[in-house]
Length: 325
Ligand SMILES: Nc1ncnc2c1ncn2[C@@H]1O[C@H](COP(=O)(O)OP(=O)(O)OP(=O)(O)O)[C@@H](O)[C@H]1O
Ligand SMILES: [Mg+2]
Image (cartoon, rainbow, N blue to C red; front, top):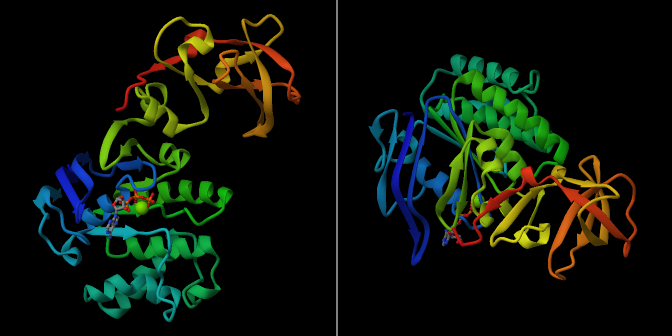
């Protein structure tokens, strides 16, 4: 096991930000963690990097207990959302910074930094200064700088959060390929479920300093198990069972593509909103119980106030627990 975090707890004064947190990430694995703001994601990464102390628990990297090892002696690289490049240094010196700290000879560190700039898709950028780079380019430099000292474990704290949507998608795919190419073990934290699903070999959902669900992305999508996880992963309906015509207690998680509008459908609702989203036209319906809303895919614009009759593929419905996790 490359990174083993066992029963780790971290508090800020009386606030426990991480409680009894246990996670094993294997060699070369890409692990994603998603959770809402304040759930303890950054705290976890800072504790693993050694930037904040833990109250209890252990952090073992490559079989060595590093719980009390100072940050600069841990084989860990941490990359943040705000690139934090050194503004007065050109790109190649930014990348080489960590190598200089390690005492790598100048010629070697420049050669290695140039190789890394090639790897992150920035050949020829050596002598540019950070202020002349776009946000995406700055994040590539930050990634190269994080990779330079060849850390065993790479921690990524919402590294793409300040970039626009299409750039996030393409850079995420590139980052996956780069991390695989260097054989790094990584943890990527984000509040964005699509990034977490796209990044990880495995992923976890966090809430209030704890993991509430962990598994492969498809396991989590098809078996969210709790209302909290189902609502965190989004993009689907989450309604009482009775709303979709099933006389049973509990909450139904209905993927959008399990709803089909057709004349002879079994359920109906009144259109309250209609929009184009992710390549499909979606109508939000107010259901007869008066409280529930259900999104369905429609083939043409639905007009507010109109009643739509539709069918739900009952075999696609996932039952989740309504209780708190
Ligand atoms: N330096 C600090 N002092 C006191 N409390 C803190 C400190 N840093 C974080 N906290 C608290 O610890 C909890 C976890 O914070 P953390 O930054 O780890 O969350 P997060 O999941 O990274 O959130 P976000 O998605 O907003 O970045 C929050 O309740 C936060 O207010
Ligand atoms: Mg954070």
